[in-house]
Image 1 (tube, helix red, strand yellow):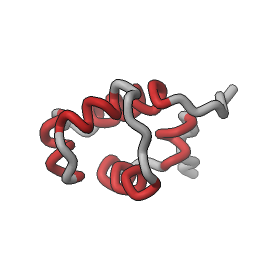
Image 2 (cartoon, rainbow, N blue to C red; image 1 turned 135 degrees about the vertical axis):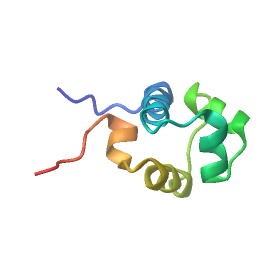
Image 3 (tube, rainbow, N blue to C red; image 1 turned 180 degrees about the vertical axis):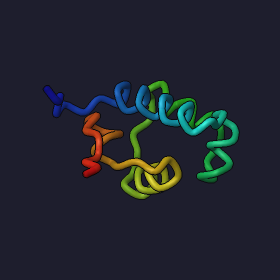
Image 4 (cartoon, helix red, strand yellow; image 1 turned 60 degrees about the vertical axis):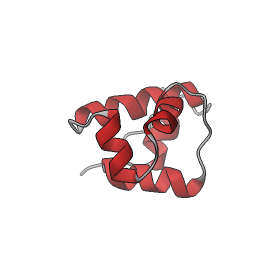
Length: 78
């Protein structure tokens, strides 16, 4: 069952997982999306909310969808 309740901590956990799956460090990822490493750390820790623009930038950089980052819904790949 998919949990439709958004929590910044859940998003942060998925973000951390995707950064690792893409073989990036937080520093490399922060450089890729042009945000500071402390800001990335706050997102991973669930201490920062994201704007739509930031969410879009993260999704493009990590080849994922907003649905996955926010709700944990994996994209359909036929």
